[in-house]
Length: 340
Image (cartoon, rainbow, N blue to C red; front, top):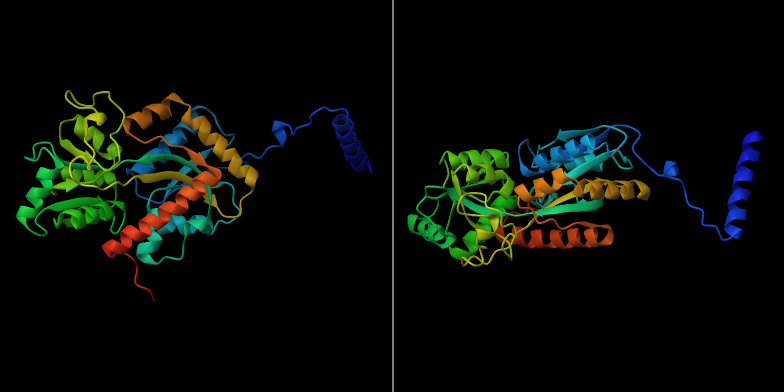
């Protein structure tokens, strides 16, 4: 009876205030927030771009105390990331689980037939878009992308090795696009992560890679790698020198070099399906706070990211369009899983 009277009085108070023209809003204490550890799934190996970004976010969240609970990063790279996606798919309704996605959000189900689609998840926010750069060893004789492709064609099919992360994923899709456009034929060599790819190129076990900027920048700065072109429609805007001679902005687009290929990779956040809308809103707000920190801004600059941010319908529409684009690219490359 006492609880009933309290609720009745509270409701009456709201009605009186509203009738008096006073705006009544829920207090912050009524808003959703995590009540236990937040699991942050990375559907890729340690050391790669997605892993680095997830751990940077974890560090920022903890340093600035942006959530009332802890956040733990968990790598689930098995099956080209399928283990991570299936884990989150199976966690329907759980608002304490996030996953950072890259293009294997599309490529893994298309290439393997694993029973997963991005629509099984809840889109939260696009944090950035990642560039791809054509890298060669710093002492390679090729100064431009055209010189490199011409040398690969002259050497003959399979003589030049292109390193990449995984099979039938972003790096191999770009490699296939280069082959289709130029007639060059590379021997594609897959590795588990972008960090390993960069080390293989520095060690000259392969001739080139199409790694992300963040995976190659330390080796470029150390004088071990040379960027030939970036697979974007415009040059990277960052003009601060990385080496004595070059900034990111000094790298020509591949289109400038005669390779009319554009490819940007999603760095976005999803949650399981069926989660509360206010939980999604909470995380959108969280990532907006993360983006405002000096650590994040430095990370974006060091990795030469395209810092586009999206959420809501805009983000969902972008993802749907990206899925169509990947299906077209993978169909042309012959990378789609055989229908059973």
